[in-house]
Length: 80
Image (tube, rainbow, N blue to C red; front, side):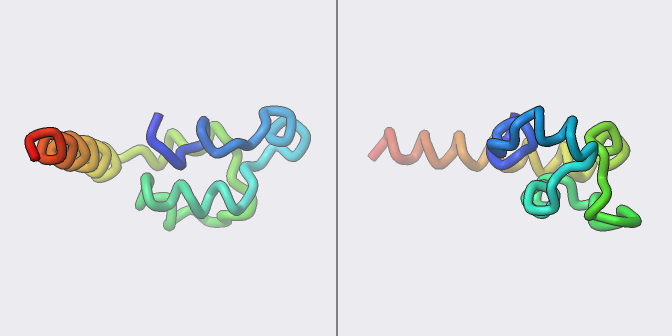
């Protein structure tokens, strides 16, 4: 999972179960990975299952682009 995405945010599953919404600070971090999320009606009341609605082609392209750039940067570092 991408760094900064829900699984690596450090949020406990218990917190999500108790509140049933993703904490706003985690939603804000997800905006970088899921640009369409900015169109959600209420970012303070976003349930985990709703994230699937915001995984778009744009989000996937951004993920692949970042992975390619990271791999390219790593190759350049190793070569020097």
